[in-house]
Amino acid sequence: MGENTKIEWCDHSWSPWRGCTKVSPGCANCYAETLSKRFPVVFGQWGKGKPRVKAKNWNDPVKWNRTNKDGFTVSDPPITVFPSLCDWLDEEVPIEWLAEFLRLVHDTPNLTWLLLTKRPENWHSRLVDVRLRLAHMAIAEADNAKKHKALNAWLELWRSGDSPPSNVWVGTSVEDQTRADERIPAMLEIPATGRFLSVEPLLGQVDLNRWLLAEHGRRQIGAPPGISWVICGGESGHGARPCNVEWVRSLVRQCKSAGVATFVKQLGASPVIVPQGYDPIDGTLPRPHPLFSVTHTKGGDPDEWPEDLRVREFPQRFGKEASRATA
Image (tube, rainbow, N blue to C red; front, side, top):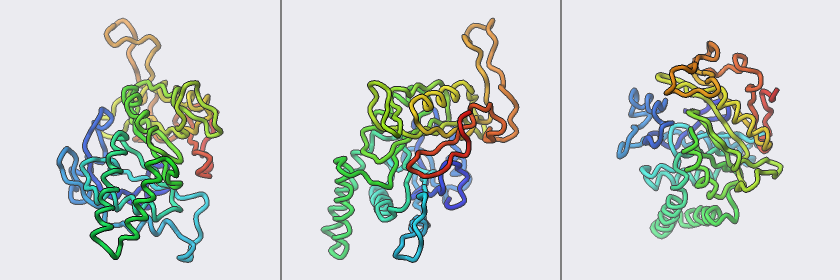
């Protein structure tokens, strides 16, 4: 749950708590829920009203922060951290836990936090609740009042948009066009230094053109500013649903046209090609068939992909080299 992450697009995965509730089709085969069923004491539980489990290794991000005053050299490029086993805007998490997590984010300015959510609409209400809690703590805990007030002031600058945290990138998960249409506008309402999308597990064609923003400032006509990184991938694991490679190819093309960094994580366990004009009701048309045989269980080996999909780019601000360039 820490340093040895297998997630290719971040340096560390670390979660302040574990457990969640399914909210959309992309959650159907959640790998974290599978882990929780085997080890609920460690991974929490899934479902409304089920208990979340708070992490014990809160010092790990402090160690990664590597502040100069502690005798370490600040990492260049900055270290990226992704909370992978929870949703940081989960409304069922105790507000005290969220306050503690945001304090950790505040206290680790040399890390870049990649805060991904399926609940961007919760941001304002959760932030209000945290600030109310901090105000009460400042009154009740005289010894720590200054610390609580400082964090509250930091959150107010974030809420107002006057000074979003420089070490936070906000993202949302979208698995299909419906979720993109619902979540992206809400995510764009959150003040942020950088914004990204996790388009996985990709379950259908997704058009992002009206939301994409190039890092150098060019954007699609009529699009609200904000998205400068798109991660995409097909589903893996037990019961993985097919991923049409043309859905992935479309995202790569959209991002390239807008100058947005793209990271193709995997094609999933069941990549397929769907013939043009395919109608599942009309049996006379050819049905989708496997595109090719992948030996990697998640379809995650770029050497097995069509060359134009071997794209693993990072935003310029991360200072990381792309492992593959668009052909």
